[in-house]
Image 1 (cartoon, each protein chain N blue to C red):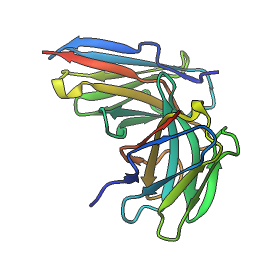
Image 2 (tube, rainbow over the protein chains, first blue to last red; image 1 turned 30 degrees about the vertical axis):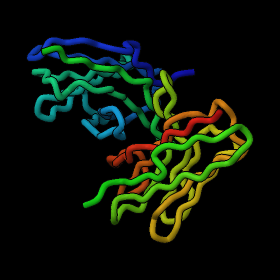
Image 3 (cartoon, each protein chain N blue to C red; image 1 turned 180 degrees about the vertical axis):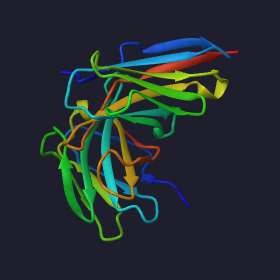
Length: 111
Length: 114
Protein backbone atom coordinates (compact mmCIF):
# COMPACT_ATOMS: atom_id res chain seq x y z
CA UNK A 1 0.00 0.00 0.00
CA UNK A 2 1.71 3.17 -1.24
CA UNK A 3 1.14 5.94 1.25
CA UNK A 4 2.90 8.53 -0.91
CA UNK A 5 2.12 8.54 -4.62
CA UNK A 6 3.67 10.39 -7.49
CA UNK A 7 1.38 9.42 -10.33
CA UNK A 8 3.41 10.93 -13.15
CA UNK A 9 6.53 8.88 -13.86
CA UNK A 10 7.80 11.62 -16.14
CA UNK A 11 7.10 15.22 -17.14
CA UNK A 12 8.46 17.25 -20.03
CA UNK A 13 8.50 21.07 -19.82
CA UNK A 14 9.86 23.82 -22.07
CA UNK A 15 12.76 25.82 -20.69
CA UNK A 16 11.54 29.04 -19.08
CA UNK A 17 8.04 27.71 -18.39
CA UNK A 18 6.62 26.50 -15.09
CA UNK A 19 7.14 22.90 -13.96
CA UNK A 20 4.52 21.47 -11.62
CA UNK A 21 5.22 18.18 -9.91
CA UNK A 22 2.44 16.53 -7.93
CA UNK A 23 2.32 14.23 -4.95
CA UNK A 24 -0.61 12.64 -3.12
CA UNK A 25 -0.62 10.96 0.27
CA UNK A 26 -3.09 8.81 2.12
CA UNK A 27 -1.95 8.96 5.75
CA UNK A 28 -3.57 11.90 7.55
CA UNK A 29 -0.95 11.57 10.31
CA UNK A 30 1.79 12.88 8.01
CA UNK A 31 2.77 16.33 9.23
CA UNK A 32 6.00 17.13 7.44
CA UNK A 33 6.78 16.89 3.75
CA UNK A 34 10.00 17.15 1.80
CA UNK A 35 11.12 17.25 -1.82
CA UNK A 36 14.43 15.80 -2.94
CA UNK A 37 16.10 15.98 -6.34
CA UNK A 38 18.25 13.22 -7.77
CA UNK A 39 20.69 13.29 -10.68
CA UNK A 40 21.92 10.02 -12.24
CA UNK A 41 24.77 8.35 -10.34
CA UNK A 42 24.28 10.69 -7.39
CA UNK A 43 22.32 10.45 -4.16
CA UNK A 44 19.19 12.58 -3.65
CA UNK A 45 19.71 16.17 -2.48
CA UNK A 46 17.28 18.08 -0.31
CA UNK A 47 15.28 20.76 -2.11
CA UNK A 48 12.52 22.17 0.05
CA UNK A 49 10.20 21.16 2.87
CA UNK A 50 6.89 22.18 4.38
CA UNK A 51 5.21 21.61 7.71
CA UNK A 52 1.50 20.81 7.91
CA UNK A 53 0.88 24.08 9.75
CA UNK A 54 1.69 25.94 6.53
CA UNK A 55 0.17 25.76 3.08
CA UNK A 56 3.03 27.29 1.14
CA UNK A 57 6.80 27.55 1.34
CA UNK A 58 9.07 29.36 -1.10
CA UNK A 59 12.77 29.16 -1.77
CA UNK A 60 13.93 31.05 -4.83
CA UNK A 61 12.51 29.43 -7.95
CA UNK A 62 10.97 26.59 -5.91
CA UNK A 63 7.60 26.75 -4.16
CA UNK A 64 5.81 23.90 -2.44
CA UNK A 65 2.07 24.02 -1.87
CA UNK A 66 0.23 21.81 0.60
CA UNK A 67 -3.51 21.10 0.48
CA UNK A 68 -4.24 19.11 3.62
CA UNK A 69 -7.90 18.55 2.90
CA UNK A 70 -7.05 17.00 -0.47
CA UNK A 71 -3.92 15.28 0.91
CA UNK A 72 -2.01 16.75 -1.98
CA UNK A 73 1.19 18.69 -2.39
CA UNK A 74 2.86 20.16 -5.41
CA UNK A 75 6.26 21.56 -6.28
CA UNK A 76 6.40 24.52 -8.65
CA UNK A 77 9.61 25.48 -10.41
CA UNK A 78 9.58 28.87 -12.09
CA UNK A 79 11.24 29.43 -14.49
CA UNK A 80 12.41 25.94 -15.40
CA UNK A 81 16.06 25.62 -16.37
CA UNK A 82 17.98 22.81 -18.11
CA UNK A 83 19.79 22.00 -14.85
CA UNK A 84 16.43 21.18 -13.28
CA UNK A 85 16.25 17.99 -15.36
CA UNK A 86 16.36 15.27 -12.71
CA UNK A 87 14.17 12.83 -10.80
CA UNK A 88 12.12 14.50 -8.07
CA UNK A 89 10.97 12.61 -5.01
CA UNK A 90 8.42 13.73 -2.49
CA UNK A 91 8.60 12.25 0.99
CA UNK A 92 6.44 12.48 4.10
CA UNK A 93 6.86 11.72 7.75
CA UNK A 94 4.77 11.31 10.89
CA UNK A 95 5.49 10.79 14.55
CA UNK A 96 7.26 7.53 13.77
CA UNK A 97 10.02 9.63 12.29
CA UNK A 98 10.32 7.45 9.20
CA UNK A 99 10.44 9.03 5.80
CA UNK A 100 7.95 7.52 3.37
CA UNK A 101 8.95 8.21 -0.23
CA UNK A 102 7.09 8.45 -3.49
CA UNK A 103 8.35 6.60 -6.56
CA UNK A 104 9.67 9.78 -8.17
CA UNK A 105 8.91 11.87 -11.24
CA UNK A 106 11.50 12.34 -13.95
CA UNK A 107 11.48 15.97 -15.07
CA UNK A 108 12.87 16.76 -18.51
CA UNK A 109 13.45 20.40 -19.42
CA UNK A 110 13.48 20.93 -23.17
CA UNK A 111 15.66 23.75 -24.58
CA UNK B 1 33.82 19.30 3.92
CA UNK B 2 33.79 15.84 2.35
CA UNK B 3 30.40 14.38 1.54
CA UNK B 4 28.94 11.01 2.40
CA UNK B 5 30.99 8.18 0.95
CA UNK B 6 29.81 4.68 0.24
CA UNK B 7 31.88 1.66 -0.64
CA UNK B 8 31.89 -0.25 -2.80
CA UNK B 9 30.02 1.60 -5.55
CA UNK B 10 29.15 -1.56 -7.44
CA UNK B 11 28.84 -5.15 -6.32
CA UNK B 12 27.84 -8.39 -8.00
CA UNK B 13 26.92 -11.38 -5.86
CA UNK B 14 25.10 -14.67 -6.33
CA UNK B 15 22.06 -15.95 -4.52
CA UNK B 16 22.75 -17.26 -1.04
CA UNK B 17 25.84 -15.16 -0.49
CA UNK B 18 26.08 -12.35 2.01
CA UNK B 19 27.26 -8.79 1.50
CA UNK B 20 28.48 -5.91 3.63
CA UNK B 21 28.15 -2.30 2.53
CA UNK B 22 29.93 0.60 4.17
CA UNK B 23 29.00 4.24 4.71
CA UNK B 24 31.12 7.09 6.04
CA UNK B 25 28.98 10.10 7.05
CA UNK B 26 29.89 13.74 6.81
CA UNK B 27 32.30 14.72 9.55
CA UNK B 28 30.36 15.66 12.67
CA UNK B 29 27.17 13.89 11.61
CA UNK B 30 26.10 11.26 14.10
CA UNK B 31 22.95 9.96 12.44
CA UNK B 32 23.09 7.49 9.56
CA UNK B 33 20.08 6.10 7.69
CA UNK B 34 19.95 3.39 5.06
CA UNK B 35 17.50 3.10 2.17
CA UNK B 36 16.86 0.63 -0.61
CA UNK B 37 15.85 1.99 -3.99
CA UNK B 38 14.36 -0.25 -6.65
CA UNK B 39 12.97 0.90 -10.03
CA UNK B 40 9.48 2.35 -9.71
CA UNK B 41 9.45 1.93 -5.94
CA UNK B 42 11.10 5.03 -4.62
CA UNK B 43 13.23 4.75 -1.52
CA UNK B 44 12.34 2.24 1.17
CA UNK B 45 13.63 2.98 4.67
CA UNK B 46 15.81 0.23 6.12
CA UNK B 47 17.09 1.59 9.45
CA UNK B 48 18.55 4.56 11.24
CA UNK B 49 21.47 4.66 13.65
CA UNK B 50 22.42 7.40 16.05
CA UNK B 51 25.32 7.21 18.47
CA UNK B 52 25.80 3.50 17.74
CA UNK B 53 22.16 2.67 18.57
CA UNK B 54 19.49 1.64 16.12
CA UNK B 55 16.70 4.18 16.55
CA UNK B 56 14.29 3.03 13.93
CA UNK B 57 13.79 0.10 11.58
CA UNK B 58 11.78 -0.28 8.42
CA UNK B 59 9.75 -3.25 7.30
CA UNK B 60 12.49 -5.51 6.04
CA UNK B 61 13.29 -9.13 6.95
CA UNK B 62 15.92 -9.98 9.53
CA UNK B 63 18.39 -10.80 6.74
CA UNK B 64 19.01 -7.06 6.64
CA UNK B 65 21.04 -5.79 9.54
CA UNK B 66 23.29 -2.90 10.33
CA UNK B 67 25.55 -1.35 12.88
CA UNK B 68 27.26 1.92 13.63
CA UNK B 69 30.73 2.41 15.03
CA UNK B 70 31.99 4.96 17.53
CA UNK B 71 33.31 7.14 14.67
CA UNK B 72 29.76 7.19 13.21
CA UNK B 73 30.71 5.04 10.24
CA UNK B 74 28.01 2.50 9.49
CA UNK B 75 27.76 -0.86 7.79
CA UNK B 76 24.77 -2.79 6.58
CA UNK B 77 24.76 -6.50 5.98
CA UNK B 78 22.45 -8.62 3.88
CA UNK B 79 22.67 -12.36 4.41
CA UNK B 80 21.37 -15.15 2.19
CA UNK B 81 20.96 -12.86 -0.80
CA UNK B 82 17.89 -13.18 -2.99
CA UNK B 83 17.38 -11.96 -6.56
CA UNK B 84 14.95 -9.34 -5.24
CA UNK B 85 17.70 -7.75 -3.19
CA UNK B 86 19.17 -6.28 -6.37
CA UNK B 87 18.86 -2.55 -5.82
CA UNK B 88 20.62 0.72 -5.17
CA UNK B 89 21.43 1.02 -1.47
CA UNK B 90 21.67 4.60 -0.28
CA UNK B 91 23.12 5.89 2.93
CA UNK B 92 22.25 9.32 4.34
CA UNK B 93 23.77 11.26 7.20
CA UNK B 94 22.53 14.15 9.30
CA UNK B 95 23.73 15.88 12.47
CA UNK B 96 20.75 14.69 14.49
CA UNK B 97 18.30 11.81 14.24
CA UNK B 98 14.86 12.04 12.69
CA UNK B 99 13.72 12.64 9.13
CA UNK B 100 12.84 16.29 9.63
CA UNK B 101 16.48 17.15 9.61
CA UNK B 102 17.97 17.51 6.15
CA UNK B 103 19.65 14.29 5.13
CA UNK B 104 22.76 14.22 2.99
CA UNK B 105 22.97 11.21 0.73
CA UNK B 106 25.90 9.30 -0.61
CA UNK B 107 26.00 8.14 -4.24
CA UNK B 108 24.84 4.65 -3.31
CA UNK B 109 26.04 1.08 -3.78
CA UNK B 110 24.54 -0.73 -6.76
CA UNK B 111 24.06 -4.37 -5.75
CA UNK B 112 23.29 -6.98 -8.40
CA UNK B 113 22.33 -10.46 -7.29
CA UNK B 114 22.63 -13.17 -9.95
